[in-house]
Length: 486
Image (spheres, helix red, strand yellow):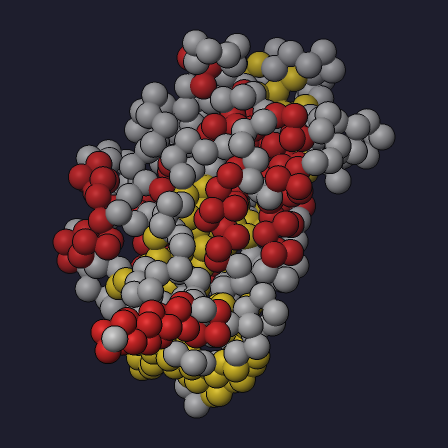
């Protein structure tokens, strides 16, 4: 009789402990030990517990109280804080208590995209075989020891709440091996510029198109051009829309960020996309900003590298497929608080879809962030960008923005990859000379020039740069989409 009574009491206790009344506080995977919280912003902290449970969050001399709703959801916002190298603990208390340890306050960035963003530090040996430019100044994979750079690798199958509250790590040792090389080098260079803790979140999937990164419902529309023409519904392109958004981006919302980095496009370029990609890209940027409730959230991206798309046996692509895609990417610059880097010079072999210069890609993105997000206007972040053209007699005079300290030829030879055409639209190789920080383009075979193109070929790796060593961005003055995109 005694044992039956004891068994009944034990079972009753177990049932009570597993009922909603006694359910434990659960946190999203992104909230954990070793994380970095965004400085100078209100910082959301959120999770679940039993319905009607009182929750207290304490961190850095702040205490916030709330009560869960009928579904057990709760959230608070910590007041804006200054950057701090001093590790602190966060206590989250309800009927149970969670203590998150070793938390810093600094700058937090999300980097996303496909394989070139996912490209992990474990491929470091490929960096060392790069034949252009400077190699990484040190063997970061084996020598990195900065505990103030923290990383979070967003794995689509492992984003469920973790009772151990792990996920964030210092950027060193084994955790760094699998982390995005672009993300790490961005953080490393940004740390040197700002001297505050840096937190990087990497959410990238090799081979992914842009559609899986956009919430499915956001793609159900027909873009309308300025001339009134309506494009087919974007979602007709397929591509598993929302697949990675649902599993990798949504679980991060609304973790406080300073900005976003994007390196993707190769998979959509293989589909010969142009203006349709621009509208998808616009939708991604605007919808992610809306998710984070910040229409001004910085969004910086990489213009994909030269590659032999025309060699594809599956689709009828040409040497102009990639330049047209570059153009589609660049149209997104019409959105506020966006910026783009060009990497046409960072390729050793145009048959390699994954060039190894990831430290330089990360550095260039950090230049953008320094100039745009942190207002260091003395930092030059881009090579020459086409601004306007003017027909002068039998030449075309081309003006550029982002000239930096001046326009030059990288190797001292005449500028290459310029083409010029008359009204017939037949483009021919042209002579291009720098004069007063403009480029004068001409050809004896084109007596009445009408338009000009630069780098308009998938293999183009021009010697045209500014004195800061950043490459000019490919362009065509006869861009058919510039006046139609909205």
